[in-house]
Length: 169
Image (cartoon, one colour):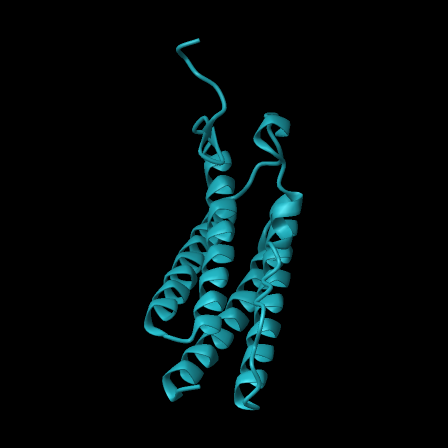
């Protein structure tokens, strides 16, 4: 593995660790229970990513072939209701701090997604490329979940990019 790919994996590891720390802080600071749970699940996903990056690096540095890349779907996806099942009832009132944490988390996920996409484009190693692409996809799912929370908080009529109600009907 090239020095640049080692550096990319090390950067990815540190970014996941920072994300985990931030999500735990947001979970602690958030006043809404569902928000706390979401941030805890995101932190656990970041830990999963760190472990996968470690395993990939260990195999590569030992000269072993890292075969099938298995990045599990985000834990949080299991907890998000399908649009048809979603409750449209109001929940606990969030604070401005909760919204700010979500917006910061959204930017973090965008940067992580873009980093993994860019690194996938840079490498010719098929396994590493697949690994980065899969991590990029997971970060996009995180992004979508956080955006859905922000949309729900704004009560703008959209949830997971689906219109909850129409004034036309």
